[in-house]
Amino acid sequence: MRWLSLCAVLGALLLPASAAPCRPDTTTTATTTASTTTATSEPTASILNGDFEGADLSVWQERTVTIVENAQKAHSGTHYARYIYSDEYAWGGNNLNQTITDLDVTRLYRLSFSGAVFGLTNLNGETCQMEALLRGNVKKSWPITNFVSGAYSSYSTDLTVDDEDLTLTLRLRCTTQHKVSIEFGVDDISLKDIGAAPSAT
Image 1: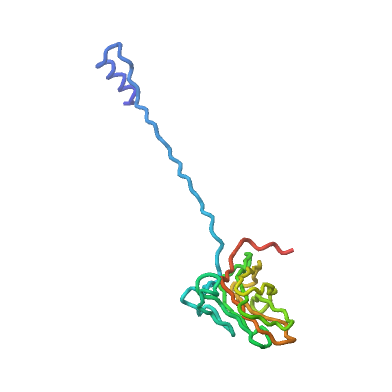
Image 2: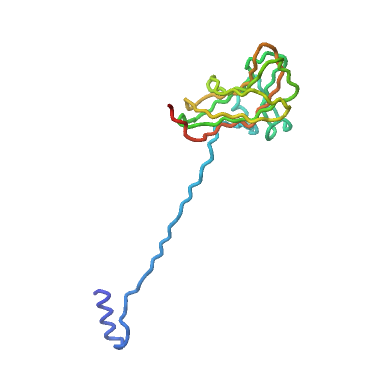
């Protein structure tokens, strides 16, 4: 029997005539809407142990470059990479290398590091520069112009890659008409994904 029919029968039998008719129960349902917040991800770092503070320095291949512990000369922390030429031709043999994996050819990357000259510098009229190479090809050159000992400068460039796995090289090189003496420190190297690579024109 339907609710309304049963209600009418019971009302007629049990309630006085003046009583209000019974009504079905009314149920109210509250609806809760959950909100979802999406966090913005930070740029992905690709360089391993770029500040040289981690225990595993084997990720770096040092060629006439030494990773030194010296908090007075490091840009941050206690370690930095030391390049040095002492009254010799600076052909570019002083370099630091790391093989980087899982790169994305559709992305744009920013390479950055800090560098400073230390001690007395004698360039004999030559010019010196730091160079960034990928797979042996020079991607960017930065002339060294700040010769205040221990005063770090920031170096950076944006670049694209053509392979997922590449070797990054940072080398110190000078023109070679004369021998030079220069000590240069590098610290806090990073390579970060900063967005989609620009479309080819």
